[in-house]
Amino acid sequence: MDLSFKTFEMSCVKDSRTGLILISIYRPYPSSVNKLRTNDFLKDFDSLLDEVSSLANKVLIFGDLNIHVNRPAKPEVCKFMNSLCTNGFNQHVTKPTHKLGNTLDLIISRVNDVNIIVDWDVKIPPMSDHFIVTCKLDYIKPDLPKTYRTLRNFRDFDNQVFAGDLASSLSKLPHSDNVNNIVSSFSEICTNLLDKYAPLSTKLVAARCRLPWYNEEIRKAKRVRRRSERKWRKSGSEHDRSAYLDQVHHVSDLILQAKTKFFKSKLANANSKDLFSTVNGLLNRSGKCLPIHESAAELADKFACFFKSKIDKISAEFDIDICIGNDSMVQSSGQTTDTLTCFVPALVDEFETVIGKLANKSCNLDPLPTWILKQNVSVVSPIVTKIVNASLRDGIFLMHSRRPLLHLC
Image (cartoon, rainbow, N blue to C red):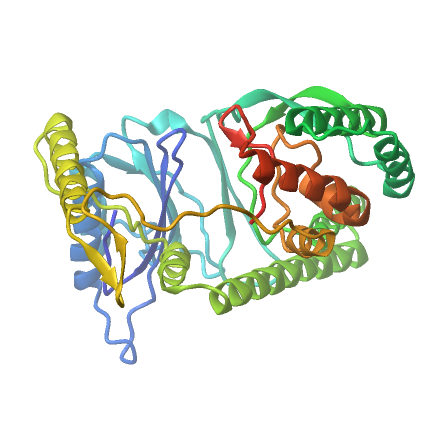
């Protein structure tokens, strides 16, 4: 929902897996300073209910609405409750939620979804004029999708021992000028050593969204926070509670620092496209918008016609002679007049530089993970150089399952 109101603040969250919509509301109490009026709030809130009532999802509205529902005779309370009833909603909280004895903090759900609220309670906090309102929902959280993944265990991987064994094995590599033989032998050696030092294991893992700014320091701090909370719940002492709150603030500070550092670095190194994409993500904007269409088939046909006409236009430009200076580089037939007859052999130092600049991205088809390749670049670079030079010499481009065996960019 893309709604905004002047008389109250609202935050809306939708669980994409279950469809449950949670709406949190805070309404400032009317005063001569903010110039807010209760009648305006009732109109805005009625508009919100009218919008929400048209949704098929289960809805839960909660927050500080600053309406004294414990005083049903007041005109504004009558209007508020009538609005709830008209739109098919029910208010659950009946105990005081404020130190003056008023019920201001509410939990609202559809009448048809009344069973979603299993139980609710009001707790008095040590510091605040408002009480804590809690509720239990009869809403099972869906299990995360799980899949079997085959991974290597690099937890106890000793790169120093691995490097010595790799150098020894590569030194015994049979001499050959055939590209296929060299690549096959190199891949076999790497695979055998990986199986020895980091064997494959298959595990059933849950698919979780990995936050790019999340780091090991935050993970450890959260574990300390959980231990502090359990200790406080068990003892109930003020000292343990203070230690728990200190750890809560510490985790919050670490998360804020990690987010700030990550997004500052990302924005500083971003091009215009990545910049807008990052900003839209931070502002929770959806940059994907399909053209206006009446059916999916119609939209697909429009895309097909667009790309076909684009390809035809590019192909038509190939029939035009392109001249650079006085030398005609491309003829109307599309063939070049110049030919490439030889390559300059690559050097080991060049490949060490190229490998050092590679991103730490890998695939199961790679003979070695990129981070291991970079750590052992002095051992591997001679054989990689030999493979590339032999490939250029023989005119062979090695492919495996649509993925190049070597990436040199």
